[in-house]
Every structure is written in structure tokens, then in C-alpha cells.
Length: 347
Ligand code: SAH
Image 1 (cartoon, protein in one colour):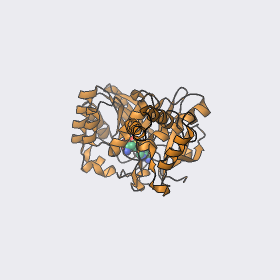
Image 2 (cartoon, helix red, strand yellow; image 1 turned 45 degrees about the vertical axis):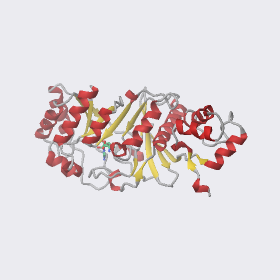
Image 3 (cartoon, helix red, strand yellow; image 1 turned 90 degrees about the horizontal axis):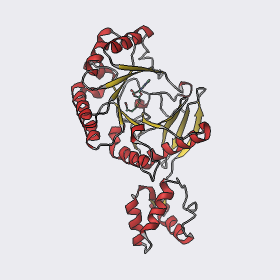
Image 4 (cartoon, helix red, strand yellow; image 1 turned 120 degrees about the vertical axis):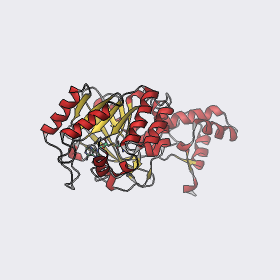
């Protein structure tokens, strides 16, 4: 009978209140339990000390609390922490805590594996097993918030959806998690501190704009030339740069929020002046900034970081065109926690 029990955290607050009313209790009881589940992060009904013993037993008979479990935690020499997270069905995802002098950023996963096929990304080598539920996304954030308080003496300050998976291909669950992260009954974080990173799914970028989520958007661009982008990110064939451009223009017209382009410069792939000039042209479409990120090798040898001259050339051309550019240093490389390295190796 055990697996017939429902996951109580799949219920909305209203559904939980209605459940208690149907049990001849008060709807207020539903609010109390909801607070235990989401605000206080209770892992068991026994922990809900202001709920009567009979009610707790009744909940135990009807529901389970499907929590994630941090199975293994690794700490990098630069302070970065990687969590291997076990889900209730024994699948694993990874999330990363990235500390700086003043901030703690959580990098969280949205899917187990990924259905996209970016040739340079370790996660792409794992096939997509399933989408994460809203609570599985939320729990990763809570786990990192706790670690931040424990090891850095401060709460989590930012969240990036740059872990495993394509967040816009698990749109509804990601947005439900964001709702919970930002609601006062959850973590009460400002949506401005949350960045969703996408490989570029035009239809969903437009939907995100329509839904007025107030989060920030990052796009993994990597090339502004269709032929090259299709080679390294084959789904670009289905969602070419023109469609992406149109969706981004729509995003900006609705949100007035500047977009970040993530961009890696690889040797012999996109390291010429022509490539940089194509990027400048693309950057003119909507207000944006460019984050030049370091390539983290994934062992297959097909991609190599371009020379520092090539990266400098990009930086100069962008700056000359008044485009803000930052160069991002990799964090947590020694524990395979850096961008594109999440592949459940520790599991
Ligand atoms: N699917 C989303 C979310 C994953 S974010 C997206 O593509 O945006 C992961 C980020 O790391 C993306 O910008 C991705 O392009 C980048 N990345 C992937 N593999 C990488 C690697 N080997 N080295 C550095 N960055 C990588």
C-alpha cells in the first residue's frame, strides 16, 4: 500500500486547505501544514509540532513527503560546493553553490539529463530521463541556502538555472518552483535575483515574456552565425538565429530587461574577427551584455579553448561597439562542478 500514498508537496495551498475541510477540519489547518512543508522545510509529519498527533497520523496514512536527499557533497579548493542530489526514484541530479566575496549563487538543475545536443556539454551526453518536479527544484535551492548559512554565514543571494537540463523545456515546473522561491511562504526571494539560462527556445522565450515573471534571461549563444551554431548546437537547425532574434526582441519589448549572452570562444570554431563581428551585429538587436565564459573540457578533445589573443580580440571589438562584456572565470573545475561539466560523475 505504501506507494499508493500521494506526495503531499504536489498539492497547492488551496488543495491542502480543501483536503482538511473535506476531513471535517478547518481550512486553516491546511495553511499550517503548508507552512511546515514550504516555509519550515519539514521532512516528516512528526516534525509538525503544532498539529495534533491524530492529524499527523492521518496525514501519514494518506501522504508521503518526497524530499530530495543530498547524497554526496564535494567542496572545491575555491570554495565551490557541488551536491549530488538523489531523487525519490533514485535518479540523480547535481546542483552547485558558487560563493564570491559578497554573494552566494545557487546553480540548479531543471531536468534529469537533457534532450538538447550541445556538442560541448557533458550533460548532453546523458539522455533526458525526466523533468524535475517543482518541489525537486525548490529543494535544491533550500539545500544550498542551508549550506550557505552553514559554511558562509549568510543566506543564498542569487539563483541561476544553469545546471542540468533546459529550463524552458520544463517550463511549467520551473515557473512553479520560481513562484515558490519568490513567495513569502517559500524563500521570499526577489525574482530579480533569479536568472533562467536557455539554449534559445523562441516560443518559450515569448511565453516567459507574456507571463511577466520578472526574472532575468540569459541565452547560451556561442555563435551568431547559423552554420556554425548548428554545428555545435544542432537544435539551431529547428530554432535558427532569426527566430531567436525575433523572440528576444519580443522579450525586450515586453520586459525592458537586458539579456545576457553566454559565449565561449573555441579554437578553430568561432575565433575569427568575422565571428566577433557577427556577434556585434547580433548584439545590436536588443540591449544586452556578453559573458565570455571559459571552456571547461569534457574529455572528448573535440573542443579547445581559443587563445587568449582571440578572447582579447572579442573583448576589444565588443567594447569598441559599446557592448558590455565580462569574462567569467570557471569555478569548481577540480570537482567537475563548472559549467557544462555536470554529468553525475560523482554518483
Ligand atoms: N540548457 C540551458 C541551461 C544550461 S546552462 C542553457 O543552455 O543555457 C549551462 C551553461 O554552460 C550554458 O551557457 C552552456 O552553454 C554552458 N556550457 C555547456 N558546456 C560547457 C562547457 N563544457 N564549458 C563551459 N560552459 C559550458
